[in-house]
Length: 159
Image (tube, rainbow, N blue to C red; front, side, top):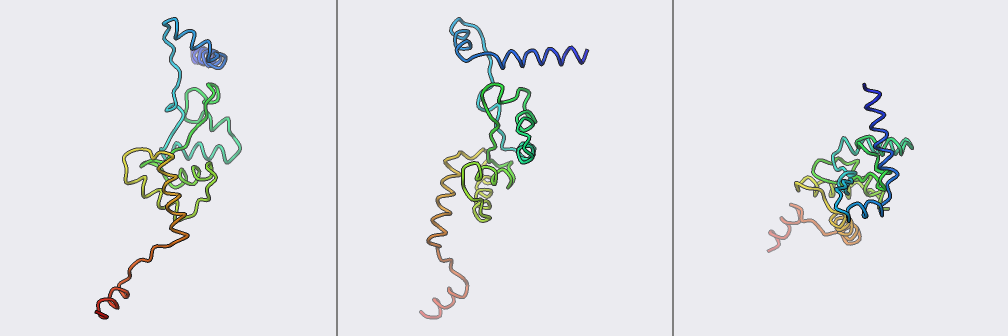
């Protein structure tokens, strides 16, 4: 029984892999219901899921990264796994995201993105993360002086 279920599943995956986008559009145009995975099917911001995908990629096992948390491999439908950053993410999500976008994952930058992610109850957009990166880059160029207790005492006593 298990073998026949696996064979049927493989057959269905082969059918999905061989469907072409124009055929799907034609089927939709004729009123046929066609369900295909959307963008959300192959993205994760959850730390443990992302960690498994990242680990597989680091080992050079892209095929494994493509199926580790997907019923249908993303590559089979012209997609790829996306690692995002959200309130359930860990630092590895952020480091991966920064590397994927060609940004050096400096410790302070990673901490700021993690702080921002934990403050929200949703996934950060790429634009939001890039804004944090820009702000942190400017901050490194022109650090904002922070008042210290000693500076404050000097100012108060000098009045």
